[in-house]
Image (cartoon, rainbow, N blue to C red; front, top):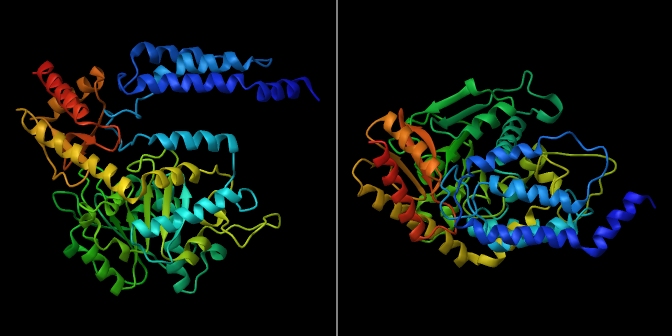
Length: 463
């Protein structure tokens, strides 16, 4: 046994570094819900302590953890708290942190049943849960990927495979050169990840047939062109700014009559379909062919938890096909056939744990509460002269602006610097706006009022 091996075995036996790591984690949880949302300038400057050459010799584990904690924790963004409203980023349900920690020690690969029986089983179970809570076709399958960016790629890859297969063209063998044309129809407010997916799949952004949207960013059904069996129609559950939902019920009926493939990008909005008081927003979504959704947004799983759902299992698994003489296939679920990755951690562990913990009623309550806090924000900010809410707050998004683009930018920068809450800016129909995304289980009524007070203070500072 080498000296290094002996050292690492000793660290496993005495467990001191794991206890040290756990203690740092507990200290972080104690302060994160009351800390400034964004790191201070000093904390950011302290990151220079990581600017060093790779050491020649091994370093004591205790000192590695100490450096990471001392200069790393204060440079994190307080996304776990209740006053972070940027980038539609959720918090984490506590059981998710605990399950992820356990899963980290297990260090499972979800590629095959042979590499992780527990990973295979949990993926099969959660797949059925998704079909149930979203009321999807019974044959719907799921792939557990890193986020909606990849989920959109997978859904559109399945669409590409099926459309070309209908035209007697095997994309896996022949590629795209001289392939039959695939049409793509989408609303003008499609998320940037849709453009990325279209590009990665070689379908070409210039080939998208853009459809105008209404004042909430919803695709206008009457303006959708005639569809056919070679068409991918892309719809949206939750506009990235307004949170608005396309009219799935009406549009999907039209698309299905034309035998088009319907893909719904529902990163955060698809979850509205699990809430009794909000599921009218997603009415008819089960008529689509594929769906993309995040766990680490509205469901508040740890980051790295996206899901692609597809009613055509053969199309998805054929599009993401993998083969190799060394691969050991089983009669159980082999996860690599449902995702682009082979080597991926068992992210399903914390997703299963959170859904198992919350249950249907808990998911309903948690997500509805986010909506109620967004409505509270709308009501309180509307009472302050100088702010305008520019969208119908149907889910968790609030679009706010001041009387001019210049003032909106100044107020936004001031809010970010004050550190009471954090949110990002956007452009809404040509005007600068502030985008408030309420998607944390930890956001309380007091958090909303405290954040609105910061908006008001920032406005006064820039008058």
